[in-house]
Length: 513
Image (cartoon, rainbow, N blue to C red; front, side, top):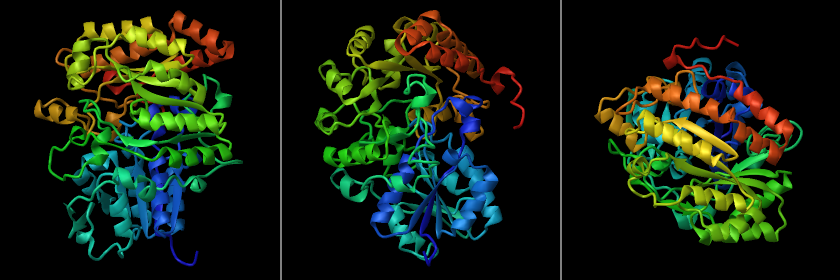
């Protein structure tokens, strides 16, 4: 190109801090879905775009900074989301560090941040010296309009933009998110071709360990894709919908924007075919609520079957949105895993944090029905909700051990920026983390909320002890061996030997690499 790029999208790397030793071999490396969406949307408008994925290329901060400088882009846009939809704050670790170094070494760089944490706390992010601009909510239209300027003049006229006047952060009136009826047009797919690779497309990305049935050889190539955006529920612990916000007022939370938008099934089937053409078989459906609206998932899954696409997929579902009549269709289309949000054993606690939206269901029967269909389950549990006691957390662990699903995630409850719990914590003067790493579920600095009955340290200890108990539990290991094989059991046992270090528990930090 004879002119500089209009925008370089950057996916910084926070894995080593967020996952500790698990980052080396066990955590997933996902394609940066939102960076790909924004890149394709800008390219469709005629702008020159490029993408730098520091995590996939395992770039040092020094090397990533050099690449930013060499790109000479008009705008360097840090797209900051997380592999877990609720972990956008976690990825601010690497993004702010890299932006700081890039501004120091290349002062002319114009930096912009967009993502879930930025949507939650735009003035906090904009107040950082390494950040010149922020895009509010998902930032699609604001970015298009920003790139039509010289990045200096008339910034106050760009809706959905945060900028600085004489060093003082200020937010312009909000811009809309892409409406449902314009999804195919204004978010026209993914810029897959911009991703780095070693020998073939998407081979630098690796699936979640369990998604590949604990077999490291099945983890690449790997991709993740949304077929819809948002969630209709308003759970206190969740900040997913904060990227839908169209209100700059203080105290706006994810629960204020519980809307969902869908691409057409035919459009998304085109993306599935592209990925299959790249040789991808292992695929994550990242939608927060894929198993919810049959008007969208039914034609999509039938289309996958009709096209003969051979995919190993997983998707999310709440325990109360599983429709048994459709499990056969899911399994036939290649959905081999369902990620179930069980959250807690106590119906009382579950109802409290979900604003009563959870229906009364028989969790044990639902798990059995899913298994009988031939689909594996990864169940998600959270320890440390505001009303949790040692007894209720033990009930949740006991339920996990009883259900003995093929995989579990166990999280300490965090008051994530953008979630209703964040403002509940502030209103009650509960201690909040003083660093981005403090919001990471598995980091050394992780600092979850205390409950009304347990300290934050007690919550962390319970969670870590529960995780070790589950992954060393003979019925679970026997299940892994029976379903996936002895080598896969050995892989799980190797993972379980990695002990997280926790500052709250008095552990020493890991030695510097």
